[in-house]
Each structure stands twice: as structure tokens, then as C-alpha cells.
Length: 344
Image (cartoon, rainbow, N blue to C red; front, side, top):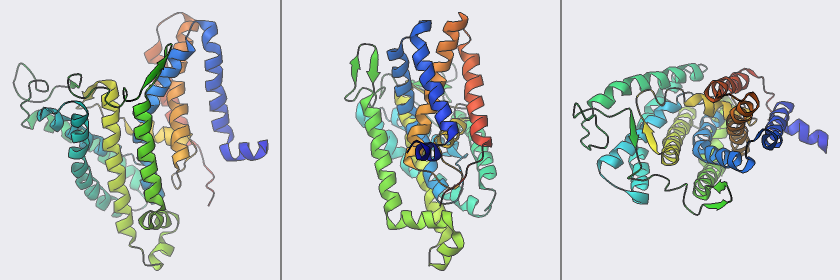
């Protein structure tokens, strides 16, 4: 029984899980509150879960890991800024941001999918360039788009969007505070978990549908799928559109919890933590599941939260940002370079 568990989970995830458990055990002995640290981990999990979930459709269709996630994030940023421009507040403002981002993400995902169909075999490399170049292009667009809301534009020029825009007066914590509760210092953002659960259920439901099954068949064996009458290119495009839309929703969840919209170079590296999390959870470039997303996101965000706190308390110095950069990039490096044996 234990052997089967080790075989399914894999030693890397077991070691990382034990390391995270060790950090939680050591925390009270070095003056770090467990309940506060666990709250931070849960909030970070809720903030990032949907963006990690966006990896599943493209992996399952054989398009590889979505390093072009910034394209979906840009669609979400456009939806968020348009919602604020229209001065829609509260839950309705957040919902309008989602609805406004959906067609933008669908259009961007469609052309992104068409591009990936032309570069089969090199999808992840091209996706990286798509993500980076789209962020650079939007650095110009954010300055030129005709926004007028004084909350967002530069005060001294009267034009162009600010680098960071607060959502405090609009839809901050609309999900985080929904049905949330607190036990001592432990805060549980129930709304974000419910939203992540809803998105996960919809993805699971879609993957069980006729289209989702055809998409998985394309990722597993495109020649067999083509012989069975499946339009391979169409299934790949559908997966890219779905992944891009999930990326747009993911950044909106992130923003309502964080309290700010970060434009310009903000989305530049946001694909890497999402890719690393799903790989840490046990996914490969050919196969991913919702369980991989849940496990990987919790491990990644847990270690990213706990390591700086515990080490700072041990060393009695503030090196949190340095440690966070070392740990996060170390996990990303490990996740991207490890070899995975894929079970079919």
C-alpha cells in the first residue's frame, strides 16, 4: 500500500511535502505563527489556483505547457480596466470584468491557437515568445488606449494608464470575503475556494464531454484521432482558447485578492510559477489533471510562503525577498528540468 502511494505520488513530491511539513513544525520554535502562515498559504492558493488550472486544456491537447499565459492575463487586464472605466462597482463590477474579458480572451486565444498549429513540435518555445512579445506590445498600448477614468490615468499627463491601479473602491475582496471565516489568526477565503472549485468542475465536465474526449485523444495520439474523424487543428485551437480564457479569469481572481491591477511588465513572468506549480503537482508536458493543479499549487505557494518566514526568524535578519526569489526560481528550475515518466 505504501509502495503504491510512493509510486503514484513520486519521491520528489513526497520530499517537497515533507519539507513543507517540516517548515510548519519548525515554525513555532522560531517564533512564526502557524495559523498566520497557513492563512497566507491558503490565500495564495486561492489567488493562483485558476491560473495554474489554465495549463490543463493545452497539455491535454498536446500543445504543451502554456508559456503564453500572459496573453490570457492581458485579456483579463483589459476586462478589469474596462470595468473600472465604466465605473461598475462591487460584485457586479467583478462579474462585468469577467464578461468583458471573455470575448477578448477568445479572440486572442483563437489567433494564438492558429499560430501554434503552424509550429507543431515547437509550441512551448513559440508560446514563450508570444507571451513576452504580447506584454511588450501592451506596454505601448496601455499608454495609447483612450481611457478617461481619473482613478487609472496618469495625473500629470491626463493620458495613459498608471503602472499600478487600485481596485479598492471597486471590487476588492469580492471573492475573498464571500462566506469567509476566521478562527483566531487563521483566515479562510471560502469564496476563492468556491470559485476555484467551480472552475475545476467546469473543466472536468468539459474534459468528460465529447469535445474534451476528442481533445485528449488528439494529445495522446493525433494520428489515431485524425483517422477517427477528429479535426486535430480545431481541437488544439479550442484548447488554446479555453486555456486563454481561464488565464483571464485567473488574473481577475488574483487582482481582487491582491487589491491592485499591475500593468506594463507585471504579467511578464507570471507563466513560470503556474507552469512550475502544475509540474510540481505531478503533471508532464503530455498529461495533467486537476489533482496535479491542487497539489502543485499548494506545495509551491506553501514553500514560497513558509521558507522566507522561517529562515528570517532563524537568521534574525530581513532577507525575505532574496530568499523568496531563490526558492521560487529554484522550484521553477527543478520543475522544468525534471524528467517525468508518463503513464498512459
